[in-house]
Image 1: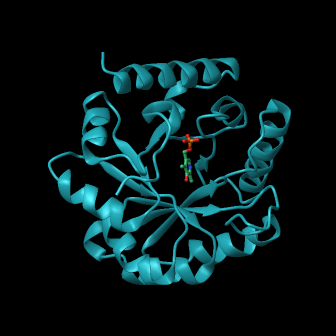
Image 2: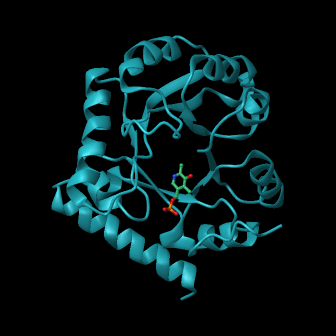
Length: 228
Ligand SMILES: *Cc1c(COP(=O)(O)O)cnc(C)c1O
């Protein structure tokens, strides 16, 4: 097996074990492969090993890879910070957006989503750790924003996403993910998605109900941001 196929198998085993430990069905946890900085050939190889969902943070880089991979039936997720002038291309070229954190961005995505594509799946990103530098709305803003986004015609609000402050303490990890789960539960039964957990903390996220884990390093190795 190639390194990537081996890593996919290892991450799959971690997901299954974590699901089992919480008496959850492993099928309820989706693997979102975070392919930022990785070349198109790496995505092709991961697809060959069974991964269908890929997360990208940088628009132009993602569009270039999409162009190189049109022959594959991939699902594309945008997971990076969103500037207003990028919403049109995101609305046209992605299946999911995990990183919506203000109403103006949601409104633009809805207006710019082509009818032919069906509703764009949306997660509202929440800053559960309260770090000043991180994107995501405040927990207190979730209810109002979710209500407004749910009204937008070409979006489908699926749930919440978070990137907590990094910590190696499993108790701290679970505390942050539990916060996101509770915020989702407070919104009622219509939402089905919790996008939380990365290479370092996917077990804690699954224990608290993650339905997408977003995994980069554990699949593809350390990222080299120096690549052209
Ligand atoms: C880069 C990134 C990830 C993947 O992180 P790893 O620690 O490499 O697994 C997940 N989510 C978001 C939003 C990211 O930007």
